[in-house]
Image (cartoon, rainbow, N blue to C red; front, side):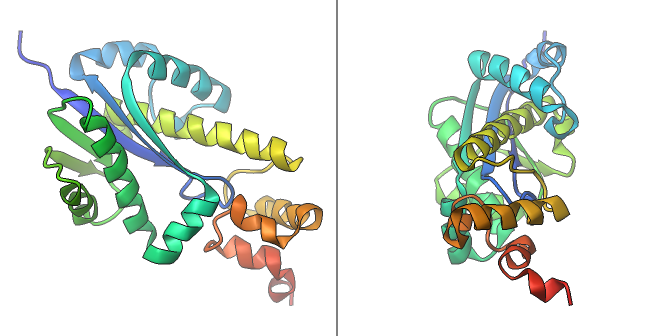
Length: 218
């Protein structure tokens, strides 16, 4: 039998959502575990219902090595204010979880879902002293380890959205569509405008529509 590779998959969740954190996850598994992961229902986390995502996530976190970075909105807004570039912020997040995982485990290859110029993640990893082989590919979730990482990231995002909804007494929607603006205005009425940076990404256009809606109704 041929040797099997130890592969780290990396993906994120929350980058397109006005409310909630940015979550980046790294997941390590041998290629020989592909059938086992498929049997658990592992595929692109964006294609799985929330309840099922949370169920699969429990099994993945119990049985496989992983790292999850949750960048809460207040921290996210501070990071973005310094970097002013979402892809650079994502690259730092990808590099952080890869570095944390590889500081404890060995891997032959890292595969990351591609979101920008390859040198962004490469440079962020090099700055951390990591020189593991790295592949960045569009639709990386077709690789089972990346799909598993997408589930870990999505599940953490779902849990954080549930926590924020309970904390602020309103069901906080995902995404960045019109219902998100409506929820934002309700939160401002309930808790004040100073609350928004603690649960939303303030560089989104939604923020301007929430804090000054008359600009968009003329």
